[in-house]
Image (cartoon, rainbow over all chains, first blue to last red; front, side):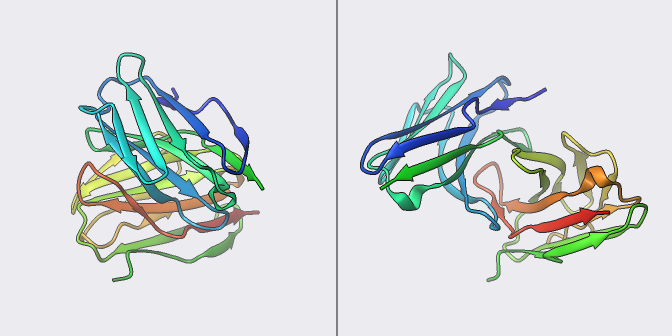
Amino acid sequence: DQQVKQNSPSLSVQEGRISILNCDYTNSMFDYFLWYKKYPAEGPTFLISISSIKDKNEDGRFTVFLNKSAKHLSLHIVPSQPGDSAVYFCAASGGNKLVFGAGTILRVKS
Amino acid sequence: NAGVTQTPKFRILKIGQSMTLQCAQDMNHNYMYWYRQDPGMGLKLIYYSVGAGITDKGEVPNGYNVSRSTTEDFPLRLELAAPSQTSVYFCASRPGPTEAFFGQGTRLTVV
């Protein structure tokens, strides 16, 4: 069963606009959520995270929102830049596990 | 401080052969993980470890084995390679329930 779901395989946005990537999870034991960015032929790199006791965390152009009741989180990138084009993975941590979603390919057009 | 180091970077195996994918970290992290990423797919958890001598199965453990004799090393063993194990393998480590750091990956092809 897929515990972390990213239902949008891809997203295309114009440079300067907002990118919104979504993620849903099913397991209530998850208490820490992360977003990773991945370029081809490289390992994923950490972007931003949020604890389950918070509903928002900001770091520069990146903001993560958590809605625990809906088991939903989202990543907002404002403004989007061409260098943001990559695969974005949502991940959830609970107990000792770290589980990832299928990823969303973000393309930022200039 | 090299972070997480995976070797080899590329490997071609014949069906039925065995091999060990190496993973080493120099950050003194207790938690270590192995994932596989199939083309166009996400990261699937194979095995993980919370410390030396402790390992546990993830989502897709069949066909693999692991050991954790030291904090630094977490090798992944494929005993009888099958074409379905063609994938990119990533190792990761983290100090606790926080962000994980990834290696550059091992691209494995089984023919």
